[in-house]
Structures are given as C-alpha cells and as structure tokens.
Amino acid sequence: MRLRNIPEARDVIAATELVIKEAEKYKGHWQDFWENDKPLHIEVGMGKGQFMMGMAAAHPEINYIGIEMYSSVLLRAIQKLEKDPLPNLRFLQIDAKDIEEYFEEGEVNKLYLNFSDPWPKDRHAKRRLPSRQFLARFGHIIKKDSVIEFKTDNRGLFDFAVEEVEPAGWEILEITYDLHHDEKMNAGNIMTEYEEKFSAKGNPIYKYIIRQK
Ligand code: SAM
Image (cartoon, rainbow, N blue to C red):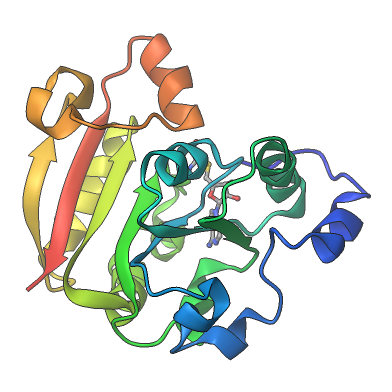
C-alpha cells in the first residue's frame, strides 16, 4: 500500500508518542518501554492499522507493535489510534529488512503478516515478506516455539510462501485455503483492511501458521 505523499505526515510522526522513537535502545528490553512484561506481538506491514487496533482492543494482556515503513500510510494509523486510544499498541516506522536492529533474539512472541505486497516479478522474490530471506530475519527475533501467522487472498503469493517454509527451516502447523469457511482457524479472526475489501469481492482468504523446526 502506498498513498499519495502527504507533506504533513513526517511532522505528525515526529511529534506523536504513538510512534516509538529511538527504538534501537529498547532492543533486548522492550519491557522498559511498556513498563510491564506482557508478551510482545508484532505485525509487519500493518498498513493503516485496522488489524492491530482490533487485536489490541481484544487482547489487553498482550503488547502490540505495528510496523509500517511508509509515512503516508502510518499517518492514517496514527489518526485512528488517536481517536480510539489503546495503551497496548504502538507503531514503529522501519523497513522490515532491518528488523533485527530493533529486537533481540527470541524477544517477539508472535509475528503477523497480512496481505503482504506480492512483488510478482521473480527477481523481486526476496522482497516478499514470507520469503526465506525474511523468514530468516523473523526467525532470529521470534521466540523458539512461537509462530508466524500469514493471511492473503493472493494465490500466487500464498503458494510461494508455502514453498518457502521447509527450505527456510520452518514447519506448517495449520493451513487453510478458505479461512472464512474454516470454523477452527477462523475462530477469533480479526479482519484486516485488505481482508475486508477482497473477501467482499468473493475472494477466498488463505492462511498458514508456521513454527521454526
Ligand atoms: N496488513 C494490511 C492489511 O492487511 O490490510 C496492509 C496490507 S498492504 C498490501 C502491505 C503493507 O506493508 C503496506 O502498507 C506496505 O507499505 C507495508 N510494507 C511492505 N513491505 C514492508 C517492509 N519491508 N517494511 C515495512 N512495511 C512494509
């Protein structure tokens, strides 16, 4: 998702407490940022934050960080969170390829990827968030035995993601090719903005849950 450049976005991001500043200094001790030791769940590529806001409202026992690299998109998430404040949700503006600079090994308890950009050209495969290159980065920061949950309506991207799991050293715990008609996997599902948009058009939603071997 890229929105038209909004000149004021940078100023709003710089001024708001909802976006974590100097986040590198919390690497290894995110409890100091939250001033509690609740588990930490993150969404990489959160867009305008609908999923993160739904999750944070439903699970006050968890701390959430929504990661988004584009200022214009992040601005929309900030505006929403300002309207409906949630003490257990904050945002981080980084490119996910640098994620290991911000989280220590095993520090993240769960990681969500939702409707990640497909990067359809083969030569861009390593930019796809469920690629083996990104799974290696995520594998360092996520706690052993913790999971990544990935949803998309893009069959090509999902097939690619499934093929990446084994060679990246992960295993599929659960998988569905029609999330909204899978009673077990859909229990407690919070819809993302893209999920609402594409399921309304009749597209099935694909989802896997994977864990490191
Ligand atoms: N997750 C949301 C949803 O399901 O509605 C948004 C999906 S949108 C297609 C993907 C988002 O991921 C975009 O806002 C994009 O800017 C962000 N993104 C893509 N690659 C990223 C990266 N390397 N680091 C941080 N954000 C990224």
